Image (cartoon, rainbow, N blue to C red; front, side):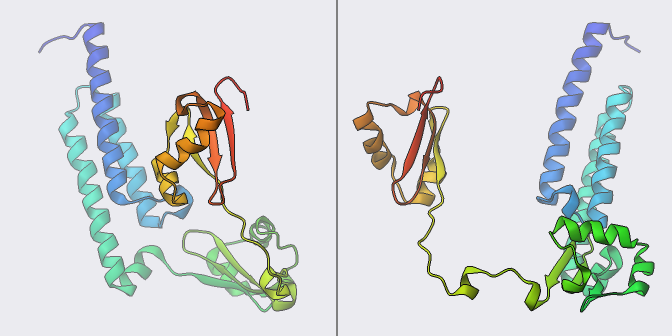
Length: 234
């Protein structure tokens, strides 16, 4: 058995770390884009298992890395199969992820549902406050989703007045987008604004500014813009 020096061991560890980083990144990417708070129970379990499995070859350099990589992709394959089954079958989705539960109906808390969920009234009030709801009687429906989030529908007389309700006609507020960042043109933003690079340079030319000199440029559909040059100059 070959004994590795400290230098060789460090290089070996760095290489294993990079490989595992790439593997885990690809695995999570294959599972889809989800924030931790938006994950279903089975997705969260798979993610935690992947992180634990990836840690084993990093802690034990004698552990074959191939075993860890195979285990990670087996979990990813399992998650993809479960996701497909959940899409095809309501019952599979219900068994794996549970179902949404109404906890408030017409301003009245469903105490039995709260007991089944093992959810305290304090937890419920905190989630309501997070959505700027301070009076339970104003709630028409409150539904606890399978990911733990609370969806709230206020009664009609408690809902804030919208522009549509007031029948007001307001001018469009064009959304400004960054079109140059640190001297680099963001072509996706230009495309969204229906601008061409040539049209952008026509804005910069009279000001004797090159795109390379721009730290940040914001632009909207109406042609309104703001420019911050490198070095903090506006």
